[in-house]
Image (cartoon, rainbow, N blue to C red):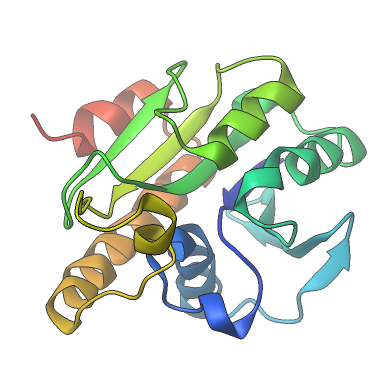
Length: 187
């Protein structure tokens, strides 16, 4: 069983904000696969489906970004999912718009959602797909991540989210994470 976690904030006021890349990715993935009817449990909205014989749970924690780890831990425990079968999709201030990186066993990079996941799981050894949102040092970080994309940035982000859905498909279908990193991570 695979768990795909999209990090973001619940509520219409956060729709299309930089911090909601994970939610946007889950939304597009479910649309592409015609997956509907989310359920709610443990302060998370989730979809259950089967893709190529693999049971998949797609999760959007509803606890706000900074508390995502509490929800992720409950899903891993309740559904008895191995941490090796989890992929977290998250925004990354340290990468420019239009870039992404697959990582495992690395630091949170200052991202409070990833910090909370590490705290709750007692490890930083889990897989993540970090999507670049750039950074603007002239704007307070909180205001920046909760801000909306410009039209041109949104186009680049939508392209990356499309690629992210391909990555998720390959992850679900059993491609090794090392192979995915080799294939998708750009130098």
